[in-house]
Image 1 (cartoon, helix red, strand yellow):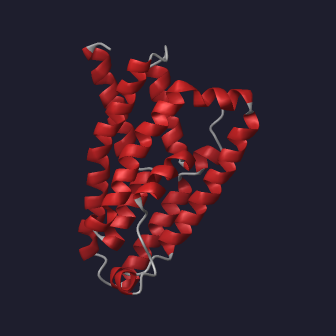
Image 2 (tube, rainbow, N blue to C red):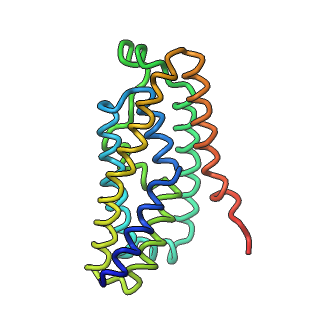
Amino acid sequence: MTVEILFALVAFCFVGVITPGPNNLMLMASGANFGFRRTVPHMFGVGLGMPILTTLVGIGVMRVFEAFPIVQTILTVLSVAYLLFLAWKIANAAPPSRAEDAQTGKPLTFLQAAAFQWVNPKAWFMALSAITLYAGGREPTAILWVAGVYCAVSTISTTSWTALGQQMRRLLSTPVRLRIFNWTMAVLLVGTLVPVLWPASG
């Protein structure tokens, strides 16, 4: 991979991971509700789950969809259902003190966040696009480069969005403000399903 292509790949991956999407909205909500430290496992799950998904897409997962279209349909249905469930959990998240004392709410674990990439429409789009554009020949080295870049830039993205959520905790000191924030995050999360359910034509 040439230096020029590498820089282009870094820019592509960075823009993909830093822009709003299910992962970032959930990290910001977690940072606001549970704080930075408790969100660290969620951050690592996103940071490692995305490169794993990208690698498996590169070595042939998409061929399974091509051979068995029903698998892609099932995955889409599961993605929509799980995102709606997560949106409901965010909308009804307990205030930080209650979440810590009564454990009525918990941030995603490492495994939950890593597994979430498999039902995250944006993650699939980013993985497929990066593999197609920068590892079109499916050479193992090129696939690993793409996965490695995603791993590196995800560190910036997950840290930034979680820190943003944590900083917002001071503005969300009342139950009313926190509830408005959580419902806003939930609505935005549901909004990320629009391109999946009603893809643009033409």
